Length: 219
Image (cartoon, rainbow, N blue to C red; front, side, top):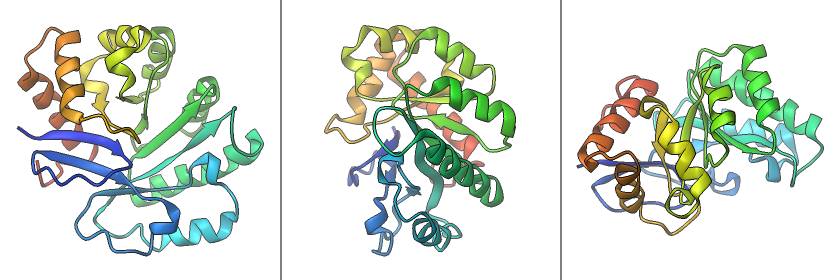
């Protein structure tokens, strides 16, 4: 069985896990060997934008860079919202140019992110990572084509569990983010919440992964 950890801040060594490692900007120039990675400017880390984007652009042609992000909007922490929007729009442009999905950090900004997707009308998939919002928000986002990556809150938070139960599995991924949770534990919980065998969850999420990454070769 191959488990997919869609967004993680840890490098896995388990051969049963396929993951996307979110590389910190300060590590961009260090070797990641064959590790699948995502690269982007987290809204908390926006500083010297030109230098940050230049570093990112130098790496985007590498085959191991599967996605842009995490990037996005955060109304609790980070610079002013307009600055965050401008930086996010630059990520969306790079996502379209390089045909790479966008992994999105969103805190209290779902209406803005959903509106941006409507306005931009991108061809590339947008994935709301660490999704723990309401069923209503999920339904609004799914109307404009979002995917959702559920993290460790799936194990303990009733609201996240309710939303997960109501989200079409064809739009779902699972992730450990920056926690020490085992991705296999999340798959087990997901199978229980959906009353499915774990193999069925694995099969569907592998299909989703192949779909947004154009039949990814290692699955």
